[in-house]
Amino acid sequence: MRKALRILALLLALSAIAIGAEWTRERLSRHPSDMRTFDSVAIGKLDTDMWRSYYERRPVRQAMDLRDGKGAAITEADWQRIGEMLAASWKSLYDAVQTPY
Image (cartoon, rainbow, N blue to C red; front, side, top):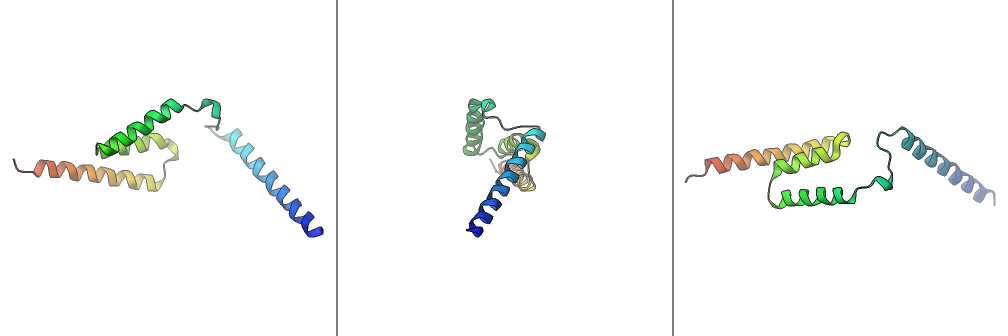
């Protein structure tokens, strides 16, 4: 019985810590998460534009969409992916220019 009470007390303490951390994050965040401000039309347009640029093979556009979409939350892996996309774009341009007529 004591073991069950200890486990329950531990779970309650962890829950209180998690709730406190989330409350603090929401209060201090520059971009609080509020579902009432979610713009489904803008998200749908961004998603459509991203897939269209992918299928039209426009890596520069894809790279800029990735950069603009992530903003300050962009990671080193994202920058690496952007670099790869831009390198693919330069290679595509080089191949197009080198093609004999």
